[in-house]
Amino acid sequence: MPFLPNKPPGGSSDRRPPGAAGKRPAGASGNRAPGPRAAKPSLVIGRKPLLEALEAGKGMDRIFMQKGATGEGIEEIRRLAATLQVPINTVPVEKLNGFTRANHQGVVAIAALITYMDLQAVIDQTVERGETPLFVMLDGVTDVRNIGAIARSALCCGAQALVIPDKGVGALNGEAMKSSAGALEKINVCRVGSLLKAVDTLHLNGIRVCTAEMNAPVRVFEVDWAVPTCVIMGNEENGVQHFLQKAADVRFTIPMAGGFDSFNVSVAAGIILYEALKHRLYAH
Image (cartoon, rainbow, N blue to C red; front, top):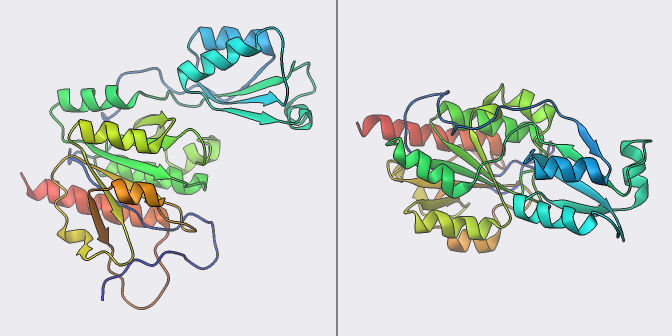
């Protein structure tokens, strides 16, 4: 009987299978929308250097700001961060001191290793290229090696983008980049402030949203993967959040032999994405 268990024993906390979908049976390169290439990771320390970097449009993974920080430049940093969708973590001064011994003035930022893309722009570019969208949304996946492996599978199976939240997801750091074997530098990564709003954007563009559930009546190979689709992959502790499950158009299960708990999330993503690729190859 097909089922999709929701929690594996041991290991990292990201081993729960969620959904999948998209077009473009081509494999690896050529899917990333035009944009600057990844830069080496570095810290941006102090208010003025950070303001200059933000004003120049340089990508930031995250800004760490001291609790209660006020004064020159702070509000402008907050404004620019909101405009550029850079998350700000409010932290004690000890956290900042752990980053550097320099005079940080209450702010330290981590420069991004990749260039984050706008979701609507990626949708538009994908359609303009004559491709059927196949996106992967990550909900609460915190293990960076899983994120890297999912990116690698996504690129190999023709997916054009990863959609991630600005909070509650693993950092796209050097370990994630290594696990992706370079895929994170080639696939579009769209960072959004709200996954639910991202689902709304997908729906407005005619892109179906899918998730995997333990007791879903439809099996993964029975889903029509040839249409524009975004698959939501959740973490292994809690799965896909309820409000995202409710917003999904299709719920399916990955059949398994025996009574073991579940696939690792990156393995589940690979199964789903290859099923999507297979459907799209046979559709032509």
